Amino acid sequence: MLNMIRMELYRMFRTKSLYVIGIILMAGIVFTTFLSADEMKTYTMEEKQEQYEYVTGQKDEEQINFGMEVTVPTEPGKDVTVFDLFYANLTGKFIALFIVIFTVLYSSADMTSGYIKNIAGQVRNRGGLVIAKAVSLFVYSVLMILFFAVVQAVSNAMFFDKFVWGSWKQFLLYGGIQIFLHFSYALIAMCITIVLRNNVISMVAVICMCMNILVMFYGFIDKVIANLGFKDFHVINYTVSGKMMLLPMNVTAKEAWLSCAVAVVFIIVTLAIGGMVFRKRDI
Image 1 (cartoon, rainbow, N blue to C red):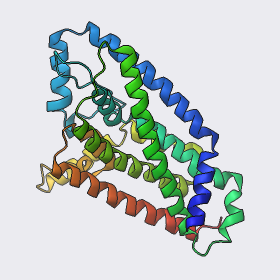
Image 2: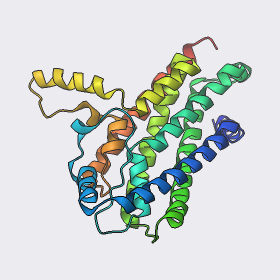
Image 3: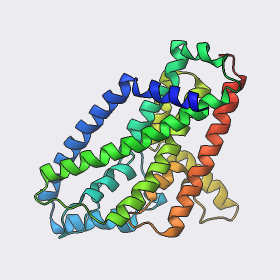
Image 4: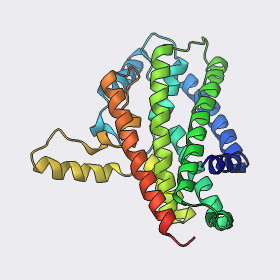
């Protein structure tokens, strides 16, 4: 198993798309931070208050729309912090988009190149290759979000009049949970890629996931469940994408445990499905 993990890590760091996606992410964060700084200077106090109330106090599962939404949750009269934009980009699934795109490219590279055929017959349990990929994707998710945090901090220093980080305690707790959720999201993308075994379809599927296309499906299930008498139940509260979007900046213990529990369930399920398909499929 350790040899498979080392092999996957080596292959991941040798993948050109890892560095290309990193460069694109860096450019995207710098550009969007510049736009955010410019917009915040033009907003009136009333507009800032309205935006703040929407992001921090009134956003719930019924207000999630199609597409990406990156909104700065800065309280009127206060400086925009690194934590504000860190939260805005993670909850808007902007970073998740880059993570799942790389996941599809990485997870399918050995299958499309024929490399997997050379090693699949040499391992006792081919399901171990899926676990090794998952470990590599965990390392990637951690490095990607840490890289994003550094780039965001530098961008804030460049474009805002005052550099303010925000609450370190809240930042570390929120960031840690989001890393776990993003890793789970990456495994969902890996599972889709392994099952479908088609780059194009898998890429479209994971991008649609980040664009909240499934919200319509969740709404349909909610109506069915409401007709059964459970009117306060919302499916999106028990999905990885839902937890990523609805996790507040000031995380409570209950929200932290529930988010981690959802992530663990999806990690176990995706690894089980991916491993089973990998073992039974004729590679």
